Image 1 (tube, helix red, strand yellow):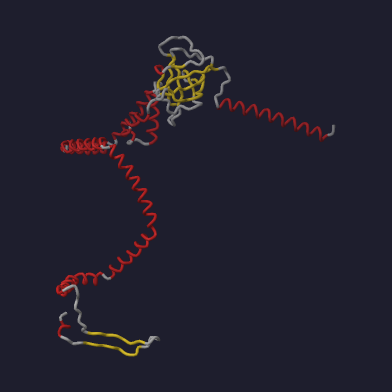
Image 2: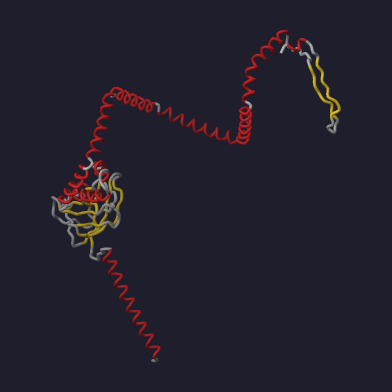
Length: 345
């Protein structure tokens, strides 16, 4: 074997060793990070009144130790949820086991805690279901934090995060955090004490608001009564209202077709109307004078027409020009009668 062949074989062996070591290390890393288990498992189901936030892959824990994971979440009996999960075969799930959804962190991740309650110690068979009476949904943070909302507005974001986490853990029954909660509550109290003037102004303004409402209780009662009557009237006339909505819909369709057909001439008319309005605005002085003189002129015309269905006109003066086809003015003509009747105005 030549020296080149020996070197190539050595490099191939080193590459193979590197690939094997890298594959083993990567597999161990995946198993460690994913907390994967290759033990035999049993599958169970649990019925919850609310499984909001529970997703496939969430932990199943007993005494804080992961013993399984959630496999599926689906609707059950219209208003309930059924969660399918597996548990290590070595972990015992009995007929007295309770399943509780808890918060893993403030981000909103959940896990299901299995605890032994009062009941039969018999082991549940594979595929059994934990009934609704032995399950508890997660704490409703919306209701909880709405109750603490006035308190949170006076805190910094860091204090809110710490206090929120302590509140969640205490209300979920996790021990060892009550002392920390009280410490943060003391810090909150100190913060509120430093803002006593602001709180006092708030209470005074609230008191004035309540006094004003108290003085207007009759008007407020009448308003509520009228509002109730209005809503009742709408409820009684809902059929007529719905029927009118259909007619309005049909009218809208017809109007749309009509507007589509006359859109071009209508746009032209509006454009010309804008020109007319501009002309009237520029000559508003002459228009005002004409409107003032118009009644007088109409009175004279009416007086002239009382003799019959005709008008008598008299030529008082005449002016004109004689032009040739090339535009040259040949003569200016001016004729004036100078009669007395022409001076009547």
